[in-house]
Length: 192
Image 1: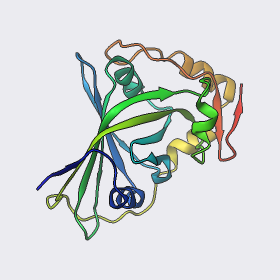
Image 2: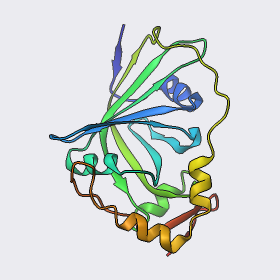
Image 3: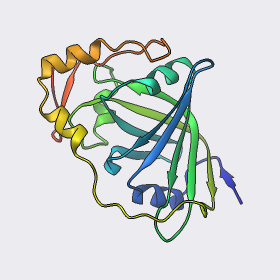
């Protein structure tokens, strides 16, 4: 049976921190619904019982940014693939914080930045739902893929910024704000 709370509890936070994968879903009033799997378990942070955030690396699109700018709604889902079944959904309103934004430094300090990070999504929690998860298969994590991080580590910073500054629309034509910096990674160094 599903249970709802208004905030994240200590039990919820402990569950979230153990999961190696999570999923995000967003939509605007028109167009496609975006549903994305997210790896790099260290990319997600609980900032408080009322707020969470995650790193977003440059990829093939920027749908989450476009949808949050247009509508703000986001759902994040975690599910256990191990012995103890559970699904946890965070419903909230989100926004993108880019390296050029005033609050970037304070927010980025919560993370070990990953090469290619283009933005951090901050989500204000409106409600949290847990459910049994009994239909989710049991699986084991072998390891995280390094392909995306390797791609970004090998990128020329100037060409990377040029490429991602050209991505100013979603696949449905909604506007996005492009990043203006290449994030090199671990030491939170940036090059302008």
